[in-house]
Length: 201
Image (cartoon, rainbow, N blue to C red):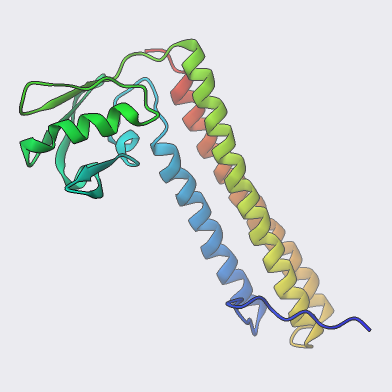
């Protein structure tokens, strides 16, 4: 005899299709904003503070986000300036940038670090686009998993006789519609970013 699977710990219990759809919408919107945040750290040929988001500086033994130890500015399209609040941090900041995957060479005058953003080579552009595709696919998989969770939650509502078969069909159609809309947003965001990477200035 097949035993009924227990819901995974922490799985939300839904009482209506509306609750399921609300949960899905929130999770899908988060997937889109997570993708946008992650894409901001992928370099293009133009200076952007977003590329420094993942840099952590060893601030007296604590890995600290760069923007919490320095003022960051983009004075021109191919330059970022970094002004540490504590000049003794110039060394650790430069080190953190050098060991990152950005491939940039910081230089300082004792007070300010200048970070020139050189034009991307054709090869580097292709590498970055490949990385972008990997990041976008990871988020697409997340959205497909969210859709699966939603469909399973709706099936459970039907099984528990909280909804009719007609409601069940409508809910599955709506979940697919939400999924398609979210996938389009992910694809559009990735296309825009790819265009920025491939654009030669």
